[in-house]
Image (cartoon, rainbow, N blue to C red; front, side, top):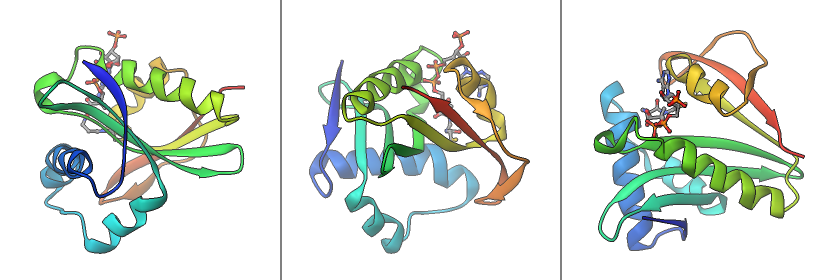
Length: 142
Ligand SMILES: CC(C)(COP(=O)(O)OP(=O)(O)OC[C@H]1O[C@@H](n2cnc3c(N)ncnc32)[C@H](O)[C@@H]1OP(=O)(O)O)[C@@H](O)C(=O)NCCC(=O)NCCS
């Protein structure tokens, strides 16, 4: 397996998008819209992959020294084996090298224990996104 940066609108990008749609959207009865996809052009996208499969992916919207992490997903067949954590730690290292000081995310409530293990803390009340409860979480990395 290897970590990789994903370039927008390449074959690898569409593979990542398909995996994310299966894991994050279809279970909620949702799809990505053309507008959702267009917005991703300016994001930093990372993945953990085998020769043929996307194992996990996540992406970042950068603003100054802050990065919003979004679309964190591990393919169903690979969940629970530490791959989500491995990919996050790789990304954190990459972002540190780019001078990012803080990462935040809107975490689904069901995944708060995952982010707590990565040393994120909850910094908001509960709110709704894509029809399910979320909280804002953040981690200072520098
Ligand atoms: C949440 C998700 C990204 C975690 O990825 P993963 O590769 O399965 O997680 P890992 O195996 O790296 O887990 C790391 C640790 O977090 C724990 N963990 C992971 N998901 C958890 C959950 N939902 N609840 C409680 N603990 C969780 C693991 O047990 C592991 O703990 P350990 O260190 O004691 O062994 C993945 O399960 C997923 O894609 N879920 C569906 C999509 C989703 O909800 N994404 C997040 C959107 S905010």
